Length: 208
Image (cartoon, rainbow, N blue to C red):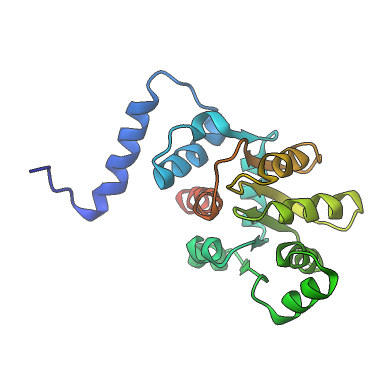
């Protein structure tokens, strides 16, 4: 029978195992907590190779969170997974407009996805935001259009949608946008990954 580990020690032991499995791999200290949190969430060591960061992306994300920025997600799952208690203590909140009636109506009228319209709605918020995209490539397409139009005040874009259609291309558009980003190159990602990246930064603030 396997060893029974106390609940409070499970996460600590998990991170110890992750460190052991990474072996001699050296991670950038700025990005290490984010990478390990994503691996912890997914049990997928590939993210040590596929997560890419613009210069000082994590530091910029942490600074924005400390300043009370909001987080915008493209799924209710990602929204649910983000530690709202810490975020609210910093003056921020999480938005997901995907289920809003006005977003659904406009998307139907225009023949576009709700993800695109929800990003446009988020761009109208009166404060900088971190955009955590784990599902919809079209959300990233919309964000890139808003960047090009000078209509987006993004502190950081987390570009980690999962899937097979337009996923790789959408991430590369954000990487080339000039905006601070954390991106999972390739097809892997997902809402849990987007939430994990946000939480890694929030937990860093809590530890500090």
